[in-house]
Amino acid sequence: MTTNVLSTLPGIYDAATSERNWQSALDAYAAASGAKSAVLYANNNHVFEFRLQAASSFLAARSQIVEKYLDDFAEHDRHAVKHMEASPKFKRVEDVEIWPGFAGMRAREDLAYLARELGIFRRVGYNLSASPAWGAFVALHFDERVVDFQPDWVSQSGLLTRHLGKVLEINRFCSQLRQQYQAVLTVLNRVDVALCLCLSNGEVVVQNNRAKEVFADRNGIEITRAGTLQLRVEEQAAAVRAYVSECGRTASGEYDRCERTLSVKKRNLEEPYFLEVSPIRDGADELNDDFSGALLMIIDPANPPRISVKPVTHVYGLTAAESAVTELLASGHTLPDIAEVRGVALETIRNQSKAIYRKLGVCSRAEMVRKI
Image 1 (cartoon, rainbow, N blue to C red):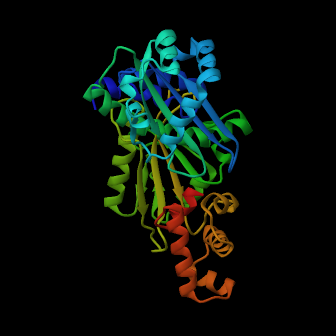
Image 2 (image 1 turned 30 degrees about the horizontal axis):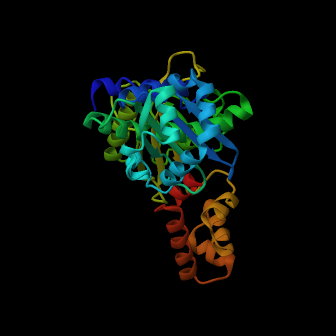
Image 3 (image 1 turned 45 degrees about the vertical axis):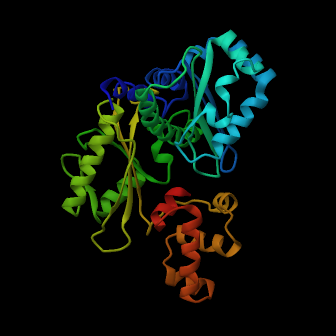
């Protein structure tokens, strides 16, 4: 990734905690992709209401033209959206794939309108969600004089799209906090999941109560007197230091890692912690120190957060038996415990848990809790 593209990452990650920054984030994304403009849509009502519609400055300044286009030609866009939603996550979808013979369609009414009013012709889209729980996509619009896409545009937009997807995921989480508390980073104690913020050097600068409980247990992960993370296994400790450094540098525009995960061994040899590291910036300026670093989520399968499995049952089509087993798994029960509670054979519970993991696309109980 070029230095120029790296320099766009801070602006993109500013949108993670503040929706007011989406316009500038899309400006940076479009410019690095060789595009004239960009638009992003996201929607879900399965778990909580979340809708997002954002556009780059070029389109925002021409909102009346865009509204007329949507009023008159929305059917063409609906066809494109359905095509992108059916595409794999982060797969580049070009206009010629959606409409065969697209190059010869300049006279089509909707395309003629875009060319005349906005100077746009070629378009590219990416599906940002692999989950049936919610849909999201981003579209790039290119100057009408563009015929073919330059290789660096293709590679740069592909790389940046993965970061947009991560930012949108964090933004969905943060939107709940902002709706409830008008803040995000300063109210992490309201979240029943272990979370902390780290600088690139590994120093923990913010930790919520659940994280403090994990660190106080000293069961494989803790905080040193210097205020940095320490893991029981040195190999894993080195990996986490590297992950925090990579993601922290990504948030400040010096690296390009959008996520890292690790299974952390415990001292008591119980089921390991699940640790996820993501880049984050204080886009809403809540901490008043231009924070740029990493967000760590720590899930302890033996002491999971209080969560409802009903939305997952609905979205992923779990059977009644699978839903009941999922609830027990998410509450920290072992497979033998669940077999006893359910009054069935242990092998039955093993088969049901495998089916649950398969439907949710996860490999462990900790990952399942994170998905829920």
